[in-house]
Length: 173
Image (tube, rainbow, N blue to C red; front, side, top):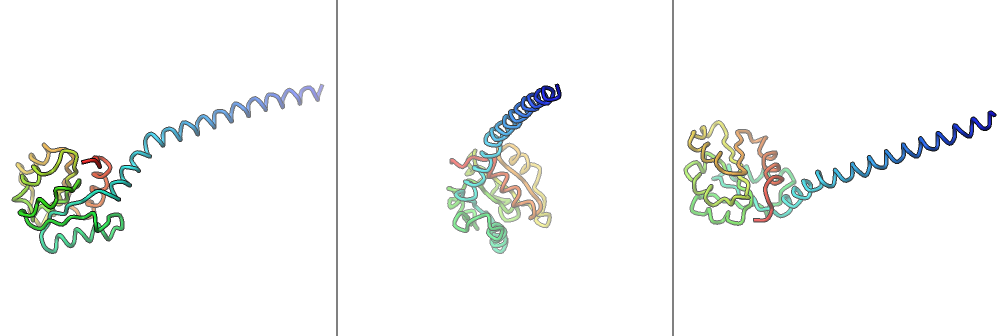
């Protein structure tokens, strides 16, 4: 009788173990599916963006050098993917850029030119430090009417905003 009870408990334990294993395997398969569907595309877009996308820095003088150094010193951006534009007359150089980084005090008079050149799928990050003056209401309205535009007042937010813009905007221009 005792042996029969042990054999019965072993069979029940075997079924419970099999059922538990199936639940764990199904959960693992579901987790992998969700990861591939949700996180992998974001990582691929970010990787492609960091490797191939052109970033146009629209700034003058030392600000241009400072912003370029900010990007390259992070180790995430290649120097060859950065296009520096110092004057409004050279804005055509940024034609191949898929992300624009605009230093507001240097380019505040050319906002409309920049917005007209920016393609719909391109990102635009406007860096407007407090010492350079505020963006007027009409300028904010113009920026708000565009897609994929970010305005930041702090240098520390620039890298974050650029990375998010690379993830959320298209690589194909």
